[in-house]
Image (cartoon, rainbow, N blue to C red):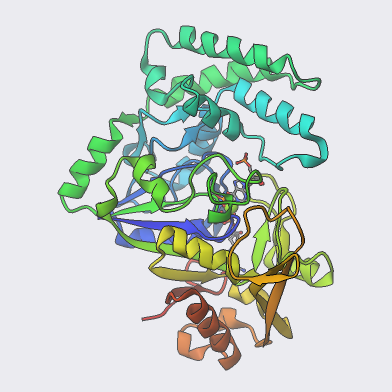
Length: 421
Ligand code: GDP
Ligand code: IMO
Ligand code: MG
């Protein structure tokens, strides 16, 4: 069986922390999509670590970790990450496995990402500029290079052929970074990545599952950044919903068990694009300050707003979420009033559905207000200890989403997680 853990909003819901906690119950943690655009934060022996490509089970010595075929890998970022966490992870190289079918991010992909974003001006996506879009474009365009290719004698030839295409494409842009300077570090990193456990991952995973091993698929980004169902075109280039697990790892749908969906108790977004419940005033600023809402990958300030139950219900539907996890509840401790969007009015008409294009027409959230708890929930060790108004808020969210909350995160610490039986 394979369980899944996904972000239900626009990313940064706290997936890293929760996977790190859940990893104790699993034998294998597998990333199935995304790439170094992800930034998953966890604390190991009190030290803050941000993972970009490596699964968040890596600090548990009993866990094997797989980077699946659906992930796009930048050898330079991966190599840096390996070097950084090496001292904290004695079995790192023994326990890490990489699918030979995962696609590579080349320096020229990063250049294309940057050039394309610059050319869009005010309409830019707000990409992390890690080369994600161009790498997935080459994958679907059937031009891409895969991890398996770095083992080939002809790798340089294949690389040159693809780069020649990119050079042509780059000519259309006025502003191009000096990407040739990134090539030497790329080839150095490729030499190191070549030494990792590169496997025929779908067979590898099938074998482990047949032997009764428990697998947790770790999502990156969030459901509203999904290439098909997110706020297109302000999305990432992969399927971030549960369906992405099957083609991102090569597992059959019938093998998928529990689907954990994570949401913050409020909402954030980094980069451009629609965000109906965004608060562009003091309350938004207060959320950013209390939640330390700055990107784990780019350091950009995250846009903040109230929880959006309309978007969340859509995400729960798309992935068949069986258990909710609500994080960063402690961030709301000081707010006298808390709001949740329960519907939208789109051009004056009320709806519970996400419109085709959130940028087209005026989308105004309809809010339900709750009184805040104004107590530090971070100190609570059990669900029963939580303030009544906090529980009322949680009950409302559960009822609206028709899904039970299984865990409540009330602080950054590994132990700040309340389990609801
Ligand atoms: P991810 O991308 O989903 O793994 O999330 P990020 O790591 O990008 O961002 C989540 C941030 O919130 C990190 O800095 C976490 O340490 C922090 N965090 C996670 N859970 C909680 C929580 O319950 N309370 C607080 N205050 N911070 C949390
Ligand atoms: P984790 O896994 C938050 C956003 C970017 C941008 C859009 C497209 O940490 O939750 P891309 O680099 O993919 O071309 O950017 O998606 N984005 C994220 N936002 N968390 C992430 O990952 C993100 N990965 C991409 O900010 O708006
Ligand atoms: Mg993140």
